[in-house]
Amino acid sequence: MAIGKHHTFNHAVADLVDNSIDAGAQCVLIRFVRSANRLLGLLIVDNGHGMGEEEIDNAMTLGGDREYATGSLGHFGMGLNAASLGQAKIFTVYSRITARQAVGRSASLANGNQDFECRIVAPEDAASILNTHWGVMETSSGTVVRWDHVRKFPIGEDAGRVTAFLAQTTTELRHHLGLVMHRLLEARQVNIWIDIFDADRNEAGPPVPVDFINPFAASPATRAIQRHSTLNSTVIDSVLSAISGPVARMSTATRFPGGTPLKWQGFYFYRHRRLLQAGGWNEIALDENDLQLARVEVDVSDELSEFLTMNPEKTGVIIGQKLVDAIRTTQTPDGWDWESFLNDARGMDRKSRKRSRDRAKAIPPGRGFTPRLKRAITSELTFISGEDPIDFRWDKIEDGAFFAVDREQRTVRLNRDYRRLVIGDSNGSLNDAPLVKTLLYLLVEKLFHGQFFGTRDKDNLDLWRELLTAAADEEQK
Ligand SMILES: Nc1ncnc2c1ncn2[C@@H]1O[C@H](COP(=O)(O)OP(=O)(O)OP(=O)(O)O)[C@@H](O)[C@H]1O
Ligand SMILES: [Mg+2]
Image 1 (cartoon, helix red, strand yellow):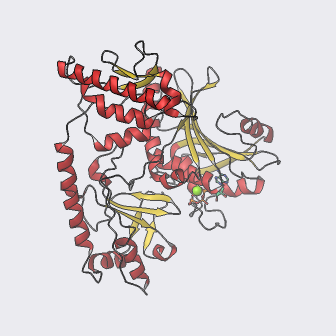
Image 2 (cartoon, rainbow, N blue to C red):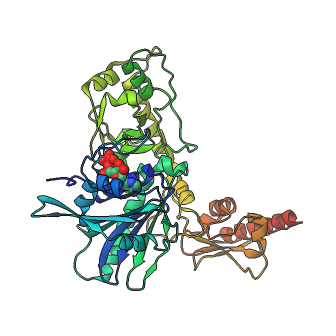
Image 3 (cartoon, rainbow, N blue to C red):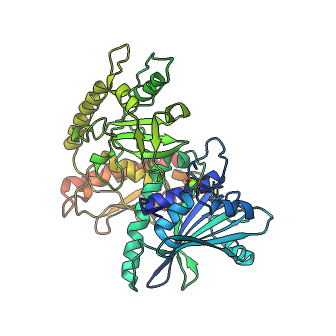
């Protein structure tokens, strides 16, 4: 049996998150379990409706009989087993429906991967796992999937390697889930967290939220290409209006963390709000430097699914020849076709690259900004390499000014006496006051260039401090 061999780690985890979402979970926690020197396992925890005896037995059966609710992300009936056994030698599922007895099953491949073995976990063991204090949720109803002997994890005992591996793996996973689940995350249908549990100390690190990464995010530089085609009647027509119509949008500003820009172009196929394919032209066009910003957003409706096949790993879509031909040849009544779309995209890309070349390079913002705001800044500016970022924080300012610039510490300090004024009744946090911080960042960022303050810099800084302090006092009256 060769199930799961095409699953990458990130895709496999996303497959399990799909199941959690299908189970109505509002919260999913991905927990890496480590000891000082080893990575021990991975847990995917959700507070969905859970499973009873019958459901869990069915779930552990490949392609088991099941009916899908409309909108369900599940489709093939093999994600759980394929994703898990592709990544781990053993996987265990613990699950509980509210007020019912907990159930558990543990599965592995034996006999040189020939036989699928499944054993029953004692209900009290399952219950004790489900009673864990997860921090971000409780699982009186819910499911925990545990992977042991994960193939990707480093072998041997090496604390440094484990830490480095976790840093990279959790970042990549955050980006992957942030992208493929971005619609669900943005709509707050689900919250996904990643944390690291230290089994020696019996203590979890801080949960890190998965932020959405929207490849079509609007930004001032984004222009939605909206062409209303009047094509109708046949399914092919509706397919085309889907591709050339309002849903075909190009994004000019969103850069993704990780990956190469060349790979961001192409089709973004969504099924039930979940991204199935992130970029790639499916052989209808070739990757091209000038097409980096050409992205086409397509919702795979039931009508469309006739012309498309999704692969069982849910990593991509295969477009049927009929659709390929239709995309290549159809013209809208106003004479717009596939080539015009590509040409528009090429033009926009050149324009946006010129713009970012013309802008002065900057020093990146550091602590004090939300990841999303940092991303927005990153997508607009190019940074000087090798420069430490500039942190922003609230502090006591001796001379009472609204802010102070500390070049040595690479910090902009905001006078905490004005914090209430700035943030109002909201709870203060490390990343509060985004507007004031961004304005100040734009104002003072240049002061951090080079070795010293110039006379001109000093004078500007005095001026800004004087006037902003006066303005803050005015506001406070
Ligand atoms: N976290 C979960 N909570 C509740 N039920 C689950 C969970 N994970 C799996 N199941 C049940 O197990 C079944 C099998 O899951 P599996 O991922 O193998 O297939 P699928 O989701 O039906 O289809 P696909 O192969 O497309 O993922 C699901 O249909 C669901 O009934
Ligand atoms: Mg599934």
